[in-house]
Image 1 (cartoon, rainbow, N blue to C red):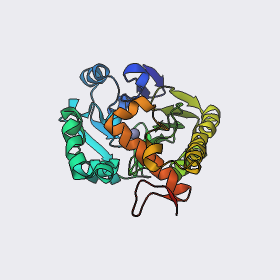
Image 2: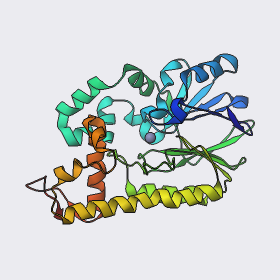
Image 3: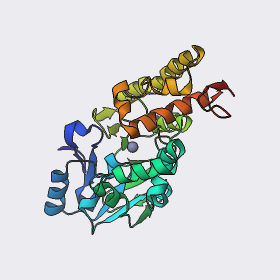
Image 4: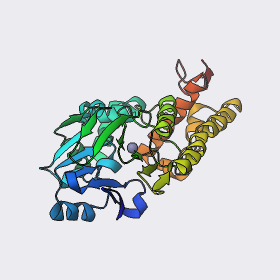
Length: 295
Ligand SMILES: [Zn+2]
């Protein structure tokens, strides 16, 4: 496990690739951030060093994956998503499932999700506030509100250490993810820029690549955010060729075409395209939802 000062970086399986993620552990405070790391490592930490409190950056399953392993530990999530986690219907709404497929689709989805995940997100004891400096004995910690990936998304920032955990600002070639109904392209860009403005020297991503210096993170962020413009261009071209929304949604712009057989990935593909269309001044509303029209 890598260490940065008092922060222990706990890897997830498969280089913390989705559906796994990195967790952070601070021994002096017995504090864990996110539970997407390997179950074995997390359980070992609890046994050998103890975990008094778990903070989750947001409700997505790759970051709350192993919450269920700690039923009696205090678990907090950001203020915005605490409410979401109270019901599966709300989670379905935030993911855009109900909007795309109606109540039937929502029920079908609810039956398909693993029990452990439901246990994980229904086990929160409370929420934490954003932008408030938590003064622990050995560290200071602020949860920055960095919406875009989800509405309530937060990045834990350690001002004294100059370290920030950027989670889903992961700089992977997939590019920015804002494909739930609670995601926003504009906010994703703004929050990305905010991360660069921090007085930080080390950036830790939640998936794959890992640890960056500020300089390197800045370079990567430019390329990462540029993927949004590339998606704009691709979608514009298809619209100009006269493709319908359904046709554009079946191409595989975010996800590989073959991955669209997976219902939830297909849902996020559709929502992502809708967000770009809206941003580009197009709409799929009106009598024929399948047609893309100038707004
Ligand atoms: Zn996420």
